[in-house]
Image 1 (cartoon, rainbow, N blue to C red):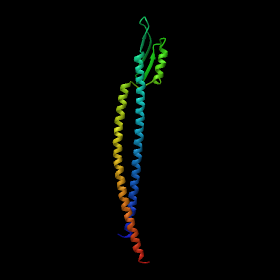
Image 2 (cartoon, one colour):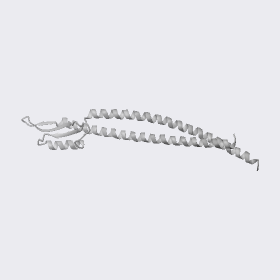
Image 3 (cartoon, rainbow, N blue to C red):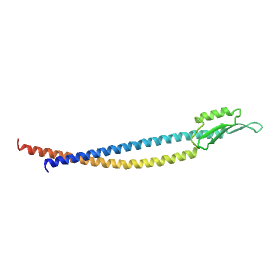
Image 4 (cartoon, rainbow, N blue to C red):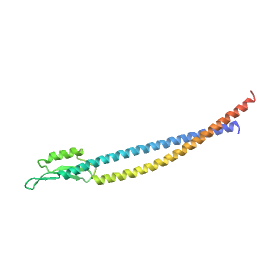
Length: 181
């Protein structure tokens, strides 16, 4: 091959290298988005676990303090734990003498009166979402890892070829212009 042909080949290889570097950057950006999605998913799951433990504490308080009867059998202090139609968890009392103190203690124990939903159903639902989404993200990440490996392998091969042709061009130039020297 002549100098011009080798120079054209170098330009073609340079263009291909740039294309591969751009593709690698795009894949890296996609992997970063997957990582951010995974982080958000883990944060949501941690919140679900926190809500579960609060709701569990509230349910244990209910079992312990649900009803207190006086000597006549009248219920004096009752704290009611209910799940509202919108799925929020609420605490209320019957207004007995000790109920307001008990109500405040329970509310303080769970960090407020609103919890996302019932403990077991909520946690099971959140675990299902977390597991499913994590598996999907993992599968996508593996695909992008393989694609990135392929791009890097091709980039390395082109770089090797580029270096060989550049050396050949240098040798051709030296031979061609040594004739005049």
